[in-house]
Image 1 (cartoon, helix red, strand yellow):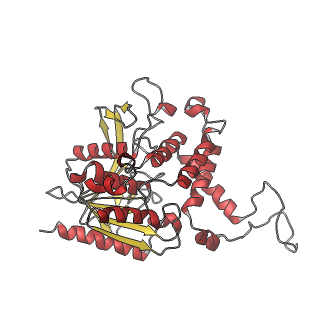
Image 2 (cartoon, helix red, strand yellow):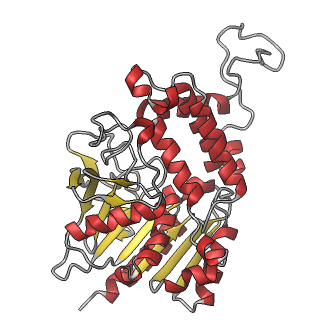
Length: 387
């Protein structure tokens, strides 16, 4: 049984404008972050955790008096856990444009005095990494023992090794890819269209109208959730189970269908609607558009004629890459592309392909083989730093 970790969110503000890849810039912005463990005297044991689409800086632990506030990767980080905070100083940061504490579309634009809304500048993975580097500068951390992330977080970890190769000793890239496939971009676009065509979207300035495009957000989340789960998991959990009928006698025969085109008939339908409803209550629509676009744009090989080997030549970090056999959103094939490019550059790397049934969401779950791989790797990092 692991000890419960009580944590507190922090925030840091930056006056100096941040130049973005789009050519725009943002000033007077803040980043929300949390830290776990203790920074050693050499400032050499820091681990940066990069979050995926709908996560935040609250990576591990709980807030005082809030039992249901467990961090999204609490199974991974803490005393005695794979990323052991008895050895590492772990930092979780919320990215620019998010809706969980860092400056985003819901905040006031200092140039106009109005809420940013749709006017918030486009941000990329590379922009997030630049902002994260500024945070580390403010914390007095020059070199990371490791940068780690899953999915979109893995793309950020990879980008760290390219943008700041001398500041990263290890990169842990989980369930990720060097870029999105056309199919993935297509899923993102359908989700975005669901949001922007919601009558309550108002061109992204729905805050002024006192409404939220919940219908679009619900559909976007339902689409995304389908891609995070494997067919095996959905069949095992729901199969073709129907929702219990409350409008028919217990003795009624037949297959149990209502034979309706609009009612929720199957358990999987009910589950997806529940997930969509929850998401629409806490996530910002403009943030969803920004983050999915950042996913679409990420492609470090693009400026190297599509040659991933050349793109990764500047990386000097050691790598751990992990993929999951049933993850069809970021399949093992995509991780193997990274493996090949790194091996072509004679880089030090470890690769684990985990036979797990959970689909893309496997990187968030407590599979013992997966946890064992990460634990062993971080034990190696800790041993490197031992006197």
